[in-house]
Image (cartoon, rainbow, N blue to C red; front, side, top):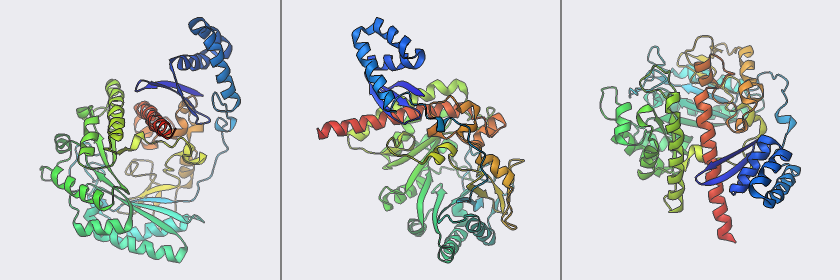
Length: 455
């Protein structure tokens, strides 16, 4: 399946099955699209009327690329319905060490950190049981991952530190290696906290929303005050102390800042080099939710962001935007491209009272309790349904050019909006496709420039 598109004044064709990307001129773009929509014979006839004999030569090039498997490839293995799989080993946990928060973010999917329930901190013994379960269910896999999450995990930092120490003990006993990460709003980080995090956490996610007015409007403290200055200062310390690696700042945009490119650039101006700003996902009746009517403005804003992104990188004010980074030469293995994050199968979330859910967004949703850490039993039938919820089994994904890059989207968002983990959230699909187009354009713009410079 070929997807031809225009971004930033350049024309591209992405072959979905092979992953090959072709930069085109206008005639090449028209010819690829004609071949895609009409077939080679009728497409050639239509283009000869428009471009004359040049079209015939160009179609010969397209035919040669097809023969090489670089255009209009039809890889049967990527379209065949696979056999159902049993749940695999568990390789990652999201530990909800705090169902509480020192902020009261107005768009919080977790009900300002309490996950719409009682405000709780995870006891040490629950965390240890969770790590024991991870090791027991990991089979022969050596590399494991644990993310400390909330709420705000720094509200239970003593337990976080003890769980890291316990995890290191388990590594030696069982021949494992645990990669710890932590997500924080950075509001109450001390220098000692940062030193520990830099020593033990492979990655940190720092929650900041960009411009101060945007941030403070949606991320007040629990007393109702501003969190911006303190969170910003602490986050800047983290970025600097980690040499601008092993972290990213993660913002959220709502309908109230559809000009979110300004927030991305504000974070760049503040000195951050690893940046992600994500669309909020809320029910339509929320005053902050994104609706279909906002989609044209959002897609246009990604174009504006791409223009500034490339300009800044050319001029030496380098930063990386999470959604504009794509590996067109290697990328993840086929299984990862088909199944995505592995939620509900390889990746699980544990609440402060030891309940297990498919991921952090499923916590508390009726019908999605997988088990608990105390008896170590898991609902493997439900896990199997998640394991087989991949792009090759989703009707909507079958004809989508982006399916091997988005891996079928977020199961939690799908279930929230359609009632089924197998029916992707429409707006998420459209935004993901736009971001992928921008990522391809960014990759080509910079790699072509590098090749030209080396000639």
